[in-house]
Image (tube, rainbow, N blue to C red; front, side, top):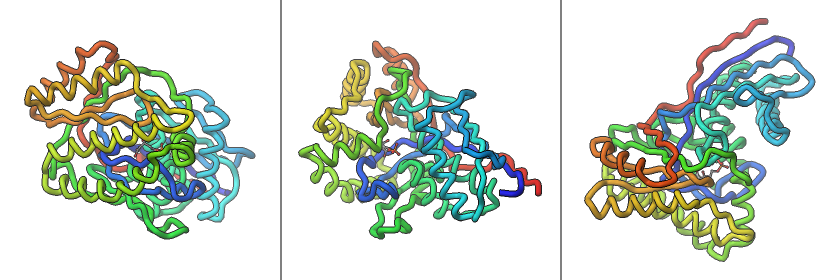
Length: 333
Ligand code: PMV
């Protein structure tokens, strides 16, 4: 690119209520199933992209040079942006998370949503939300959902080019007020990427076909429950989808065991809280943290109970947040 240009975007991670775990096309990251998520207000990723014409793309993550693997994954998304813009030349990408990276807190979702917006704007492109979601999906499947705020639905799509595989807003927080408590049980990075894990699952889990074929019905039930404002149904379905995904993970060879002692302790405590009449349900992703879904007007009691579980290091409380947004843009010819 002949001109020097940069842009900065902020995106929030999302937590899936109906999980995405499996692709119908690995290269384009076309999901084998739709999914539904909530975008979290309390956590964020801020990413600045500057096309500085260097020989190679560079990635600085939380102030340090990122791994070669992360750099290459970023460069692949930048290649798509350069292709669309008819541009050349490397970029400097500086990204900061205010939460643990790659520990099951979906940093790739907020990271690639912020990267997709910042990079396209820095390259002089102005994509619509759907095109941005399609682009972000190619960096991380769940990133397609972080383009939007509130309750978000990701469509599986049928096309082989992926043009019908994007996320869309489903409902705002007012449809169903929700608080998400992230019980942090471990701060370290995860060992294996979600993409590798789901490919292994497809190749080896005896439960794979049942998992994939049940997903569309789960999405339909969750969509209806959100739109009906039925927290008890939303919570029950979210917990069910998460436990089914972990059954697939546990039955993958080699087994993907993300549950830790503290994770199981939180799960059991939350199930006991429900018996005591509190609205609380769990969900987990490809990491040891447990997210507890609850009603904002009962959350103080749930917070106190979950904080007291041995092995819970800290609790992050979040309401639902907005979609990806541009912070600053500076394009000098
Ligand atoms: O977007 P990826 O490749 O990190 O996959 C996300 C997978 C889960 O977080 C486990 C589930 C989901 O739907 O977010």
